Picture 1 (cartoon, rainbow, N blue to C red):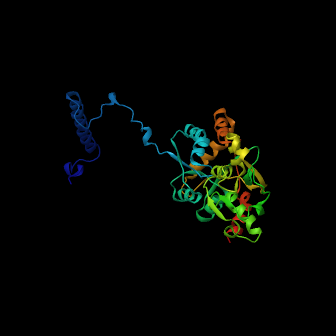
Picture 2: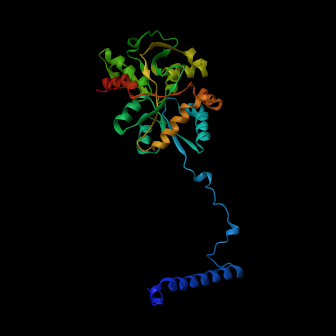
Picture 3: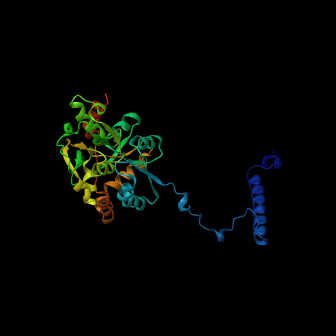
Amino acid sequence: MVTWLQLFPRMQGGRLFTAMTVCLLGALLVLVSGCRAGRPAGVIDLSRLEPLPVAAAEDVIPLRVAVASIISPQGTVDSYAELLDYLETRLGRPVELVQRRTYDEVNDLIASGEVDMAFVCTSAYIAGERDFGMQLLVAPQVNGETVYHSLLIVPAGSAAQEMADLRGGVFAFTDPISTSGRNYPLSLVQEMGETAESFFERTFYTYSHDDAIRAVAQGVADGAAVDSLVYAFAVAREPELGERTRVIHTSPAFGMPPVVTGPHTRPQLAAELQTVLLEMAGNPEGRAALAAAGFDGFVLVEDGDYDTVRSLAAMVNE
């Protein structure tokens, strides 16, 4: 390669600088004359600058939110639509609802990073925290409380007064890892020295609490155990469900089903989501969205709030 020093071997100090300046001025004159003649390719016309194109809405990565099947798919859409719309507005990005049939399937979505945030049941949190580091974000507050119960329900006309009276009957569980819909009623059976197979004539899974309520109301099952919050919400919306069912037993309190993130959710996003959820009750649009889901607001919770759930799951599955 030929260098400036090779072209001007005898030029030094000011003489070399002067020669280089002449060359540069000459090149600039060529460019200017070219611009005047017809603006050749590669030359930028500073008088015709335009803003960079804005990314289309479809190019924005959506926030993906999973809701465990604590209630049926249609019930989930009805209850959470306003809340997800609120998140979309506050975050300035699309929000997609993701649903799966079982709690384990939702946990798989969180573990793999296919969703950014999820509403899960308490046993699903215990399993997720143990297996892949699921993290608490917030939990809903309902009627000023952050606890719920398992309710043992039977048809309104049933003579049953306790779990022992359901021996030989048909029982509806909600999900294989549900605290209120499977683990707690199973613990009542185990206290009598029985297993589900030996105590009931038949059991089946409904994979949602509102469907378990309907199974009892319609006489498909002789009994079921359901989330107290879902039961209260369901009978408020459909009073006939309350007329056709009866509560015969209430469990001790369990920590509220939480909102969680997984190991693939960026810390900055998790912090932003937490802030938006905690501040929802502070504005009219947020309160309306919360009311549609049956919540007062969201609050911070700790892992220790789920120790009772953790102990129950260990006992019935040992």
